[in-house]
Length: 510
Image (cartoon, rainbow, N blue to C red):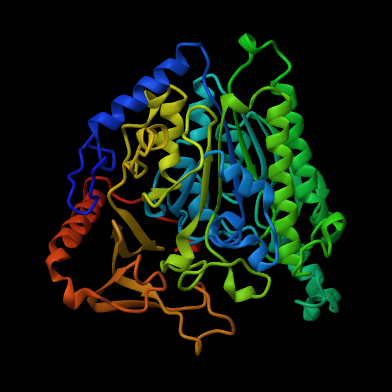
């Protein structure tokens, strides 16, 4: 199917939706396949497994695995059963990514520009979530693991569409770093400072909640407890999968399981069963082994309960590696890391599997954003008409890309935002940047995005990501013929914020 994303024209599907490629033959093939599936009265279950700070290159199927001291046989095997995305994108850090997946909207629209820490304000106030819309469409919705999209009551998972939640509200290091004498001796060995942290207004437990109720503490997250969390959360998700298979097949409700791991966000304290299990003999790599084992168990349970063929699985990470904490960090072959708009900050693994519906043993470099799952999951669930019309949705429907043999991405542009600064866009193999974060080794101990400073360029920079994935050689002076394509794409995108003004983030989040 001949299609050049650089020169092909998009279609404005609706005034409040990001324009997308509508390729008639591809759309027809996908529509026919989905209609055949829906004609049986079934709707697909959705299993979203979102890792924390796991890098593009960590898994064997992306060139890591054994080569980087942590084999991932279960994830690699699963990738061969579906589509492996090589240009899948998150936002630069965890909270913006998670909120963008859940709302289909860029951070500047939902207002969560960076992660809130230690009880800082910020959340999903006024946003419509994927969980809410799937729930309204008859799905059972289950959240497990890390949340980190706001601790305020209105933003807690049981109040934004989830029937049940079992996990913690914030992020791994916030619960434990101040308890570890290796990282915080000045707190651990000071009773006064320890009490000071203990009195900070953040929830220090992992919690359980049911729709519309109050969260109940399960257990305070100490370092020993932290090492058990991924195992506890895996067991909770496995129990959910078993429970959803108990009715007769024709009586089963479709479900959405949002399983977010604790690992491999720093600091890593693997379950004792996995300590020293990796060839690298390092806590981060041991955690990758543990996460791979969990994926294997989830898939095995879907098989054992006869739900595998009725479940679409998506596995990804919320951002690139956190290099400021090296060597407790992920692997990426790209430039820079989490917190930046260089490829290392936002390009993440993306594996999507739906046996019998998504062609197996396939890889694609089609551009895909985690935001696209908002539109796509709703379409696959038969609930595409529920997509909000009163706000701009930045995700695009990638159904025809996923369901068509040799399908191509429905997304033309990938936009990079560094908090509230527009950084650049990608189309095809080209990435045009007008701002970025510095990754000068004079700025930080270990190269990473959060430590850098925002820098704007007097003249744009252009990188060919096929020839120069590390973004070291600006090519613009020799490729000026493309300039109008890039600038017109930027103008249209920035113009969408005029007709749909951005949400004003609260002061603590600016």
